[in-house]
Length: 132
Image (tube, rainbow, N blue to C red; front, side, top):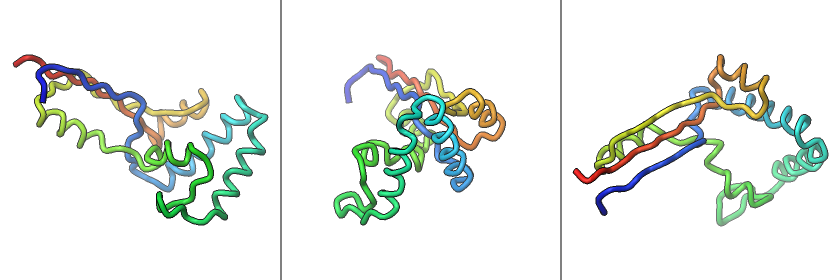
């Protein structure tokens, strides 16, 4: 390993405490945001969801893949263990500059509710490995 360096992670999802409730809230969040910000994609989006329900599992990925987003955003649904990342960084000599968990939501109203419910959370980590 080289001396010095930074680690920066932002907007990464946390593993939810209540996965079923988080999934339901995420679906509601997506639907409300689609209607408000991208109404032309509401019906095509419903079509993609239906296609995914009836798609066979892709042998390479072990799950249904309808679009490139299904590959790129797969781990967003399951979340990431930020505490494990912090431990690994510290074991590698990084000093944690900032670690923050925050409620997410695509619209102001759902973000307001989620700030109280904490069903969907993301995290931010900034770490630095100095010369010592």
